[in-house]
Image (cartoon, rainbow, N blue to C red; front, side, top):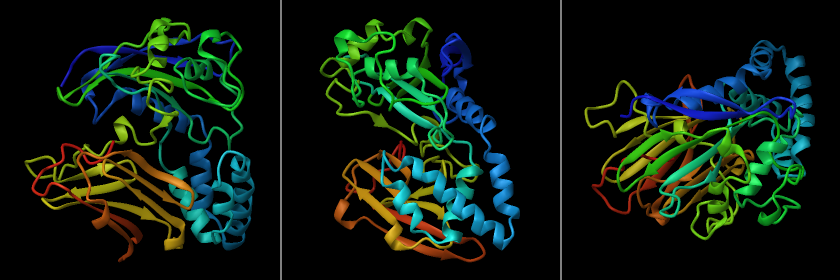
Amino acid sequence: MSSGNFTYVFIPANDSKPIEAIIGDKSGGLSDDCLSKEAKQYFFKNSDKGERAAALENATPEQRKLLAAQLREEVKAQAAQSSYASQMSKLDDDALIGIMQANQTSASCEITALTVPTSVNNQRCVSMYSDDNARTQNLPYNRRATELLVACGHSIAGEPSPSRVAIGAAPPGGICGDAFVGRCHDDEIGDIWERVDFTVEDANPRAAWCEEARKQGGGGGGGGSGGPRSLTGLMNQNAGAITNGASNSGFDKGEGDGYKWSQNDEEVELRFPVAAGTKAKYVKINFARTTLKVIVAGQTLVNGELGGNAEVEDSTWTIEDIKHKGKELCVTICKKEEGRTWPFVLR
């Protein structure tokens, strides 16, 4: 594991405030990443999640009904971007409040990969961390963060051509609220994951690395990787974090962000606590050979790369009643290569 410090940046939504360079400790590696932790805590402390969680926990039946109605009104703000609002409005009050309560008690953030590691960019991944409830909180548009997103080739409504990225060019529809940006060296073949510097100069949309990201194979939105890659569970939400009770192998069980996992020679199992009112019709699982996406009531729980190849046709999921604990969504992924231990489960 690496030691020493690294630099990342803070981009305020308020244009009158300068972009700041922040020093972080790289010794935590991927499983205890300093930037991911700091970003999550920042957005949690600057939200009303704590107050809302307490209100939900102590609410009377009448108050719960009123809160559920208020929550339905709030999520309608996202109707233009997704079907989230309409799906949430179909939930009963207990299911809706249960899902929102779980959200309010966790420190989380939205993580968008401005670039993914490729041979062209020397296996460098640049990620942006923003508030995952930015729009429901009506946070202000972050022009500078959005310009950086556009400069890396990602497509948003009314995107300017890469040749004319300029101050004020990025349109609304991008990043809202404050944002953090950091860089890592991520080489799976070399088994390397290490934080490296991302400076204030790098936050300039005219920087050379942004131009490189837009090229074919450059790792950005226009570099052959499709559209923006939003990774709710990237880095510190990876499933390689080991619990204290894990065996000496270190890879048989552990915890991700909002779920527990285990694996044996034949399969990998992920367990997500879900609201008591969760039904099968609220669940959507996208199994693929190398990726997994789990959606419950319109909310993406995980969306990332698997640590090995899956046998898609044999993979399945169930909703189980856990005594004294409510319900769990159990996702079982069958390994294509039996007997192979995955070095990570999901990231």
